[in-house]
Amino acid sequence: MRLIDFYPMKGCYAPGSPVDLQVEMSLSQSRRVQATLEIFHFSQSAGRLSTVWDLPAGEHSLPLRWTPPSGAQQGYGAHLNLTCLPEGPSAAAQTAFDVLANWTRFPRYGFLCDFFPNRFNIAETLGSLARHHINGLQFYDWQYRHDQLTAPSEEFIDPLGRALSLVTIRDLIQSAHAHGMAAMPYLAVYGASIQFWRQHPDWGLYDADGKPHTFEDFLGIMNPAAGGPWVQHLLDQCAQTLQALPWDGLHVDQYGEPKQVWNAAGVPVDLALAFHQFIHSLKTAHPGAAVTFNAVGNWPIEALASAPEDFVYIEIWPPTPRFRDLKDITLNARRLSENRPVIIALYLPASQPANLLLADALIISAGGARIELGEEQRLLADPYFPKHQPLDTPTLAALRRYHDFQVRYAEWLGPSAAHLEQEDISAPAGVEITCRESESGLAVCLVNLGSAPDPFWTEAQPFPPVQTAIEVSLPVRRPVARVLAASPDGPDLSARLVAFQHKDGRLRVSLPELRVWTTIFIEFEETN
Image 1 (tube, rainbow, N blue to C red):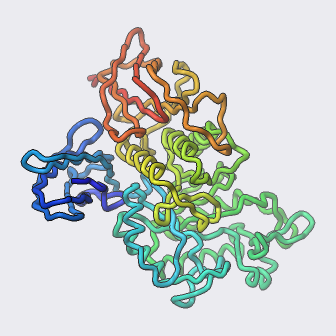
Image 2: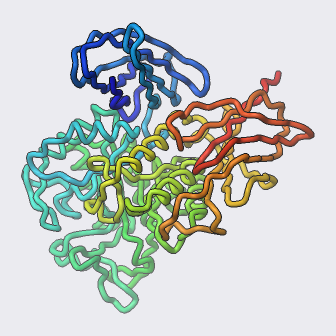
């Protein structure tokens, strides 16, 4: 017997709906196989079921179903054990899933960008992304034109010469919904085709010398100031596309430059204010639609984070090249937005697996998530999304464990947990610590940045040397009930009890090792 895979069928599940998990296995001969499924909420068993299958030789894909408690909105771990009866070989695997009333409470963002006619692998593509718990998808460059979002015909050519299909787009949206994912269409807040821009020169943006702004010679940059004709045109386009296709919201982009601009009359335009007001206009017109707006290079984060966007989206660039910058940018966005979810776009090559895992560990530890996987589980490696890259099998498996970990411990690591500033923490050199506080307790995230004093994500990094016999000490005033630890760096994501001492208001925790990322979970005694 060979256990091939074990995974959820959806990126997330709605309260009250059953959770469908899939088991893929192969047998060299006919066997009776017992499947035992145990569901965990944190370290406690939340449910258990067992079934027996009489199976012929060959490959099999078999369903298991579990229904969460009514009203539960939280993360779960799922442990599967297969045993050939009566006393044959056995195999085990783990996965995770969560229950959410609204995906924007804990968004895990992926992307789609291949909308060619007669696409045949739609269900397979969406199913593979559900295994990573992706629950929202950016449909990148799906539009007919930047100034006319929905195409006038079923098949069309996009501004870069790609043949696209509205039939494919509809099928992808439908499949996304079937797999527990929201569909978010891309649009640019101030981009217009050159033809449209030339027809409306008074709608454009200009530099201090009166020269018009363009983007890569195929787009004109329009004036997004509230109340202007371009904004009204774009708002009309958004309304039309939300009516024409079953989108779940709008993903708004900008290009980061220019930052200082003037209108056709030579009057300065405050882009940060214009972006903020555009979000307000969208949410006023479409209160049920999710809206996010790209803070390119983390700009203008104050204006965007204070607007009513459903989650913060930040595209990070090399002016902030340190790994610690990823944590700081995420925490700052959480602070400015009153702890809304944060999605980070960071373009790393598939050839740098250590960079990928370190970036994920730091961002997730700070309460964020990365947009990194899309078409056929390929990596988002370039700001032009169709330049996605394939990942090797070990790296893809490691990323999947990290995504399982993020979802399994959602209440400890997700957006609902607050950042707790802790200054008096003792840990080995090279270990970056982030503390998260929730109703469940205190999570202390340890990320091993290695021996380099301040490593850069813009440079290829080796995996850090494994640290052993780890001692962590921090101030804890409340009575401690239990201390557990878990890591996504191995096959078992279970939280296990670890040794600790709590004396004179200080907690000392001992860990056998730290590879890349381990989280310590501190549960407190209940007080009257």
